[in-house]
Image (cartoon, rainbow, N blue to C red; front, side, top):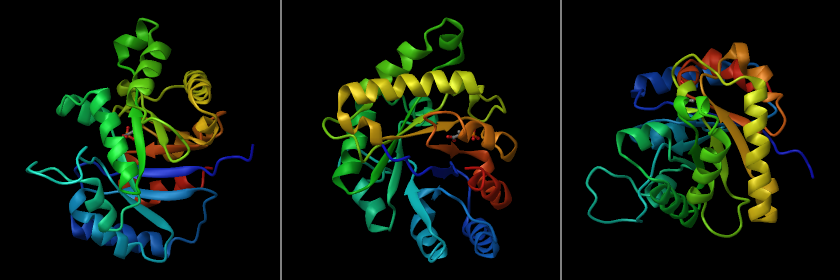
Amino acid sequence: MTALKPLIAGNWKMVGLPDDLGRFAEAMRAWGGTSRGDLLICPPATLIGAAVQAFNGLGIAVGGQDCHAKASGAHTGDIAAPMIAAAGGAFVIVGHSERRADHAETDAQVRAKAEAALAAGLTPIICIGEQLQQRQAGETLAVVEASLRASLPEGDLARLVIAYEPVWAIGTGLTANADQIAEVHAHLRQVLTSIHASGAQVKLLYGGSVKPGNAVEILSVADVNGVLVGGASLIAADFQAIAMAC
Ligand code: PEP
């Protein structure tokens, strides 16, 4: 099988005003470096359209951070997948641990969101990961497998991206080590290919305190096909360094 092209994805979370986007885009435009990977920024929903314009010609795709399971309707404050697509977005993160924690999102809801994303022509990035106490209890593989199976849309998997994000490593400065990442990614790959042959084409991202200083090591782990970067993706120089690490 040909190697999967790495995806370097930034999640700006609930951070970023138009001026921040402008500064980031300017720094990316002035950047002399290149990446072997595809680049993606998921800004707050208010900046999706502006980001598409600001990144024009830079080869940086834009995505949402969440979408509703329905294509439209009476859901005040929510954003639907076709709206992200119409604004020029190509991806959407679903099931991020902060959404699961803040909004009590279940795997079944995450699956419905991923299906809505696919229906709108977006690539869903489905996030799964274990809590610290689950890792300490030796439950990591069982937890991520159960969450993966319950969050996956039916059928062909080729258009999906999965992000393994240990909850204890998100925004904490703690990262899973290379052996821990390799073990989980190998297991996820095996589960995905056992579900559908197209599971071999699913990009598996690692996320959890990825920084310029650890990106090379993480991106060289087997079956790591990219990274989902939170805090460090807000700093153009850090995002560039991570982009060059693959
Ligand atoms: C994330 O938001 O998905 C994430 C991994 O955050 P951080 O890189 O800040 O840990």
